[in-house]
Length: 608
Image 1: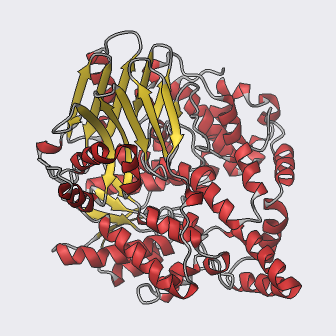
Image 2: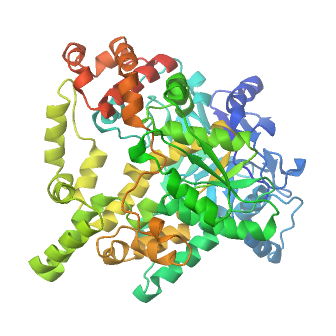
Image 3: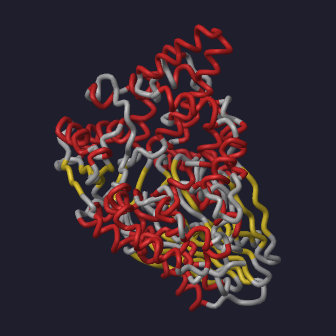
């Protein structure tokens, strides 16, 4: 298969030949993503670069940039095509021959055979660029849900792309903040909800989109090739639990293909426990060692899930590793985390995931499965209660509504939160009024447009899910995971984001996904014979949460000093009004102010 979760770079000059040394240097800025090899190819005004993280077929045959065996077509590719064996067999029957065991060669052959339509046949995660010398075009694409990143810039003199923003910063001169994105983040912590980045002039190819670049003129065309709204599958209610288990099991099995050590992230929640349990069973059939699982342990009792994770580790006979970050670890790493993530992020829990990835690499675990995506696909967030209860009201009247309300309380949701979900979450006006009052020191405390769209759809659970997957929630979680894992040369794989599972899950009726007050009911039923009852019917949801209360309270003096000293923040904040109330703010806002200050300082960002 030639695992290629790596680092890519490309440059198209619009004014002459490409500088080979420049391509070399910008490719190597993401050496951490590909510690196992590198390659650069420059031809005229096109340069391609690649850093390799070898996962399967560790031989030199899978090196990139790779040329098609028959045609002058070159690729630099970051990702995994999990169904490469099936595609390889199909292509061989059509007359294609292969010289390597890599999925990169299969991807190239698929492009030659089916053109842009090859994307519909891939099951995996990808970000790639194919330079087709036959028509002098660059064909770029990002996977359906944006697991792998693709950043780019387009100027009068050049088009460039990369796996990380740091590769493009040297091409833009002085970094300038995107005011809208900084304001959106300060108000509510929202990130990754648009094709823009926090750096003005640097954009990203959105999930499920492709791009064509005319190499001769530099003109580019971007279009959507995958729309989740049109791919939803209808299912019978009596087949739900079995189908959910079969789909998740197959998605997990596909993601275990590797020539290096594989493990999993294990928080002790329903999603990660399901993946760990299924993966451990398959792994045992082909390996003499126990399946690795890694847990980040919180020092705060209220969000410490260690006992749940221990239960799964014992039941599935896992080789269990734990990491317990301290405040000192957090304080000394906060600036480093910002450098790794490249853009602001919403809280210290990033530190927990970062430590998991670091522990994985230190123990030779190069591939990690993760439960990311389970909440978005199966309604793991309680904000969906509003749509669920209103559906009861429409179908069964006030008696049905009251029955549903009672079920939700029994399942662990408080009356106060249910009232907030019904009255507050669905109102953009109420939320904006709250922000304006609570954060009146901000110069533009406006509700982001993405959240306005979300608020308009809170009575439509399916529309909410699509927005969460494509815009308001999942994209930022995937960014966090990619940057944290690849900093240590670790590949993460996400069974819940197998497109077959996503399309099936979104096709389930609301009353099936949220049943008798229980979120993610189909998964709870699907894992009836696999998971302990204590985990299947957990009422709380945590998931590698940091001890925010402990860390941020102790860190507040440091945050205050950094915020007050920030030149960048003066563009967005009335510093005089902030000064007297900083220590009375909620910890989330204190962190966001601090994070923007750190970001501005580290990247020397200027206000526009």
